[in-house]
Image (cartoon, rainbow, N blue to C red; front, side, top):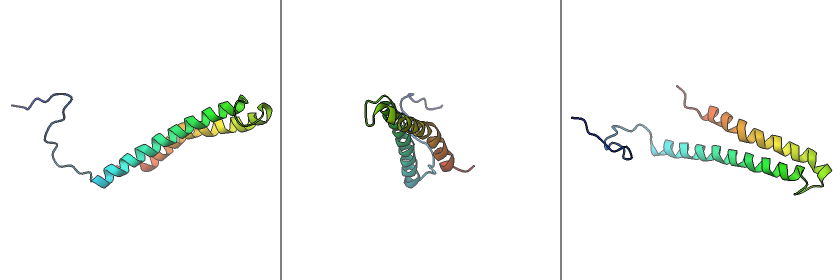
Length: 93
């Protein structure tokens, strides 16, 4: 008879685990780096918007170019950088 387990509780015997504690730590650190890159991208976009609106930093006309450059850098940081890092860190098949 098969052992029925509750959905919120994993089965008690997972068999041999092939991942070491070091690889788990490395995976957690990489996940944290991806999240930090995304968060930094959002912060740069918000900062760029504040600068382009003249709310923070520069005069409105002077800050437009700087603000738009920061927005573009933030969007790259938000969408492109995490994918590049994930591709670089992907486990080979």
